[in-house]
Image (cartoon, rainbow, N blue to C red; front, side, top):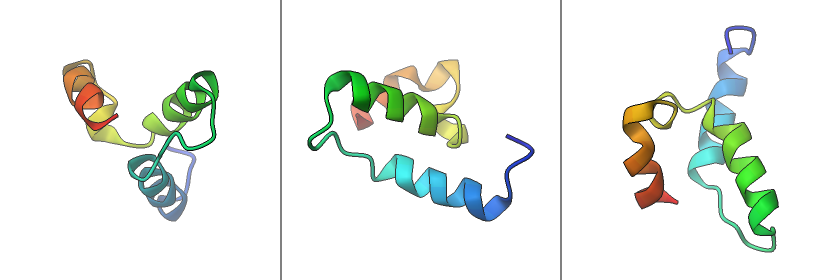
Length: 56
C-alpha cells in the first residue's frame, strides 16, 4: 500500500465505495471487492466486518 501514489489510492477508495455487482458473477464481485477493500482503511479492519455486511 505504501508504494501507491495518494491519487491512485483515492481513486481506488472511490471505486470501492461505488462498487456494484451489476453483471458480475458473485465470484467476480467478491474478487473485486477484496482487491479494492485494501485501499479503504475503514473497511480493512477486523472490527469493520459488520460494516462491510451492511454496506455490501
